[in-house]
Image 1: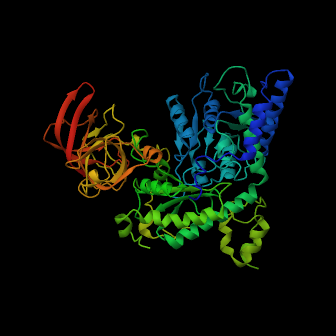
Image 2: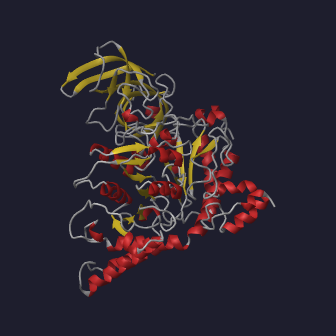
Image 3: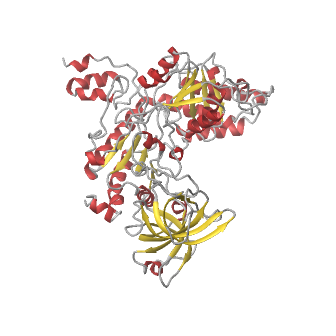
Length: 393
Length: 236
């Protein structure tokens, strides 16, 4: 049986063996607490400091402007709740975001609204893009924060972050971006782009799960969410996850060293899948922006197959391909169509019938070729639905 | 020299256009000026949803209808006014699943009832299938756990649970089935519910959040809500 094909890198990425090696070494050789003054402690501190520099370099930032968290979600929470000083004598103000943000932002906004913060959700176009003009018009005198993701996890669209951040800066508001999907794949330089807060997560760039980071521009003051020993500049108390941090640093370094070559390779694989699809399934269509998108990200709709994505996903899974779909009727998850696609103007049924193919470091041309062989068989296996839609090849 | 070569590329060498260096794209633009739209830094490209996208053929019927969500609109369907489905239609009540069940309880019969014996389907099996035609015409493949199985008639009672269990444990494929009835709990209603009457209702876990209609032929008022069985199902 051929090896399985993993095409779900927007969900998570396999750990790079070089990262695993660095983490193992840290676990075995640096068991000290980085806050301790003895040699073991100093050794662990050195590893944390080195990793902080590696993660900071991904953004062109000074190491002191990186705070490690337990996840990208926590980084988002720290950015939003910290900016509004939730838990302290906060002054309710106004913030601007989009309806296609990750739940880490959307749900935090809901909480902020309950705390008296006014939230404006900017519309997006059919590709999921924010029009900078709408941001301009959404500002109010008390707007304190703008939060717009760098790349969307569902459709892969990249936002014009530099332009949006400039607008926020000109109006005196903080600009936060959730770069969990784009960090290490798309350049983001804090010296060029006036972003104030950037959320990242290691496991999206072949690093370990359970470790994230928030870039905080010098001069931006956040209120902590976790209190204790004062680690991470007092913003995230807790003994550092040394091995996780080392893994994040190594993963960041590997991503930075090879970012352009990897982007070119993934873009070419992406175009190969698109071209192959055009040949075997002309009814398929791309969702999200055709070019302004993550290099290895495809979100696909199948005309006539809307709503059948569960069966297609299962069929592909059986054939050895792991891809992602929207959720389905489930008692365990609220039964909503993709809110991202709804916000982009899709009707509820099309907002269900999509598949997400996301490529990563270890995917090969051969795997893409095999996927293109398997996919039409899987689509055709949907029987009558397929036959009336013309999937008879 | 073609006009497009005069566009200044940003020199970031990000690779997102598929070329390693901006200079390579610049050289290519001489022959293929349309490639400029691949540069995310300079392109202000907007593609109509009804047009062909990125080499993938499309047509008007495959393109999603566009909406213009207003500034300030909440993104979630559960913020719609109560008792209105995603197509804007009124309904009378929400049908919840019993709290002790793993999902919404449905009474179904495969289009070929013999398949219940042939597979065979047993209590606890993970099943998938689609409720084709009568009733209720849902276009979505459902997944669930068999709760009761009548080998003589082929009728199955299952709880719809979503795709996670089948992916983990394997499943039996019913093909197509008829949803004969739903059993559940009414905790929110805008109309008085009477046995023998037909209602529009919204199964809480319906993926599409489309209203259904059906005849209530069993009722039992309990402190936690009205237990009902609804038969004669249709979507809409």
